[in-house]
Image (cartoon, rainbow, N blue to C red; front, top):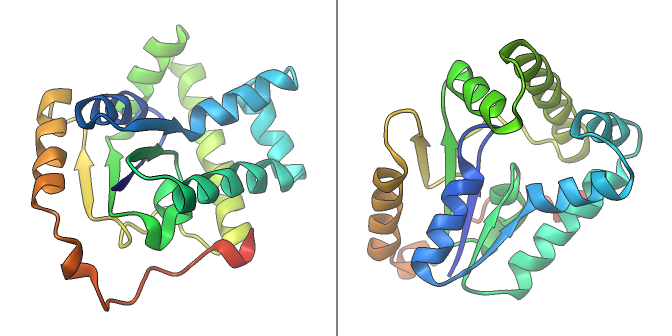
Length: 192
């Protein structure tokens, strides 16, 4: 089974995806870790690397190709990134979108990055705007479109154990036969 976990910065997707993978005994693949390592390799902050990605579409496209390849070739994986649901496409069994109100996400980011709230807000909003423009330009994806997701959870409403319980119940109840014959979500592979 392939599960995807997506959501904006500060939604808790990395922590959740790691816990979900551990609970299921699956591999956890983080697009954010891949993106951060690419930024580190180039000596860039995330904001600087996002700016570079605006100028060089191969930054995003390389990362997204890797995500699609993982989705096609591996099983028993929790694939986590902002676009993992889109990139995995028809290969994903269950797609989860995690979110929280902006102020909650900013508090989490400021705490995680040990920065002040104003800096966290400015960088997060700039990054989200940049990513949304690129996703729309490269793939025709509206990141606000939640229609491709099987579950959408507000992580400000449940603690991590509650979130895990909800998704594990969905995994347990999942019946792949129900999906047979349905039209798959638009494939973005043509744009990669």
